[in-house]
Length: 97
Image (tube, rainbow, N blue to C red; front, side, top):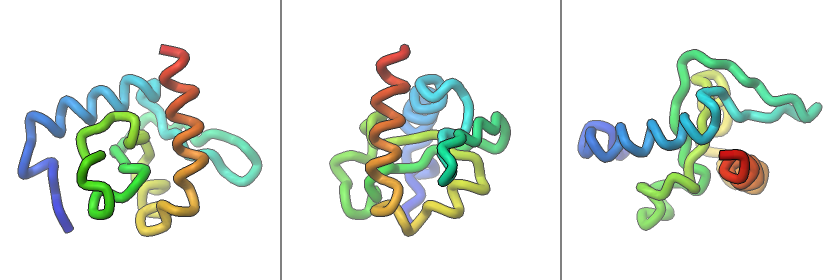
């Protein structure tokens, strides 16, 4: 797997900071009952559209969302299931900032 955080640490740090800030430093996963996780620890950046399939979007903050470790593991590899929900959440978060 391509670990861009190690290949481009400064660029990654900037993307991570922008993503987490936009998302209020909280996990943005929404469960089937419509509740947002909101966990504030062990946060990770998740690419909404897989970076392997969309290399042109790797550094685009609008293609990222903040998830806790637990939810990042759940959605990784199932991006197609969560993409529309995540895009909606990112747009809402961007409108608030």
